[in-house]
Image 1 (cartoon, rainbow, N blue to C red):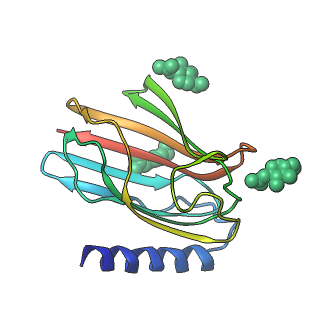
Image 2 (cartoon, helix red, strand yellow):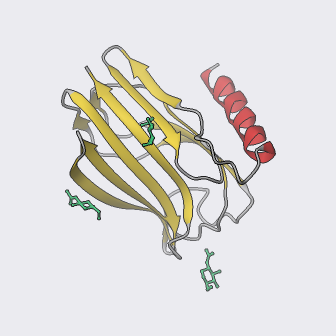
Length: 163
Ligand SMILES: *[C@@H]1O[C@H](CO)[C@@H](O)[C@H](O)[C@H]1NC(C)=O
Ligand SMILES: *[C@@H]1O[C@H](CO)[C@@H](O)[C@H](O)[C@H]1NC(C)=O
Ligand SMILES: *[C@@H]1O[C@H](CO)[C@@H](O)[C@H](O)[C@H]1NC(C)=O
């Protein structure tokens, strides 16, 4: 059921992405990654060219390793190599910067590595993330996916609220 719902969501999002004018100047809608009791994670695409779909199957303040995620996007660049930069802020102060390789030429971790510009990716499965305890508070997170030429593939700003 959840898979179907997410596929429907991703398809709707892709259609929306395709029909939206690329010179769109207004902000993209806010999406929910997960919401569970006292934890809520929301995100918005900060790529002026497109929105994308992302969700996590279970939200928990005790973030488990090997989270199951769903991710759907149309590639605006080739991704022979793909990197993720994460910047974490609390009340405007920078707490942590983190860079993580997702696709490397000799070490493609995911089946979508090597896909070409214009192709659609839909990924559902576990990722190898560190398990962490999320302290109470509100956090701002900036995420950017980029390829080996430092061209943006996706960009998002998120808010994590643990009340
Ligand atoms: C993303 O950033 C914009 C502009 O700073 C802000 O208005 C919005 O609330 C943020 N969205 C999320 C989900 O954090
Ligand atoms: C990166 O740039 C080089 C030189 O312009 C080009 O040949 C290569 O295809 C680019 N790679 C990607 C993934 O776009
Ligand atoms: C994270 O990177 C930003 C921009 O490069 C920098 O201003 C900030 O001090 C860095 N924060 C940490 C905790 O390293």
